[in-house]
Image (cartoon, rainbow, N blue to C red; front, side):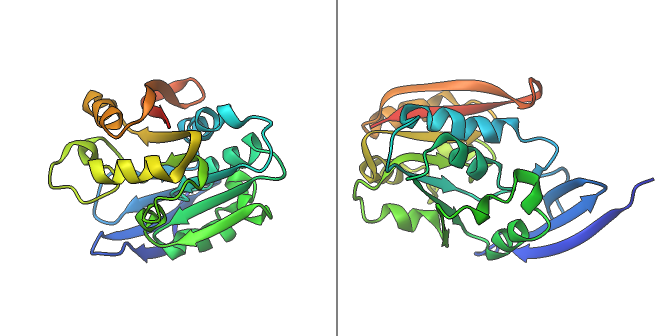
Length: 225
């Protein structure tokens, strides 16, 4: 039996629990201490790639674009965003937990091809919401993978990214024709209504498989300024 080795731990700010990075053979897993299942694994990442491919499709071949990736994860969305943009692009990645950036510079880096080594990348440590406070048109695409499911989309008392006020701030932070792409573990129709109320146009969603055309189904929401 292949042993599982704990490589590192990290506390999520605001008492969000403890993340654990583990390795079993060639596979890496990030989980939450005391909770069953996996938050993310290097084996399954097709929908993370799709988030960037769909969210950046409108800027294929366009020079001097700027993309924001919300959530470093295991680097797959960042790597796909770099592939989808030109050499003149800037790709910002916002991450709340500093250790995740360090893990991607270390043992996780090879999983997605060392995207942090690309000179176009700018790392933004801290709460991604702060980047929307300026409400200035900055990004051609915003790619968000910071919540596991649509519960955060629908709670009235939620103070995270998906409140009506936050969505309007994201809308203002996009450049004209910019795209907001949001990853979700499942589909929540009410979220599409919230996007429209926040002045987004051409709101749609696509269902994508978690792993190369098989496995669980995930949802990518797309909305345009």
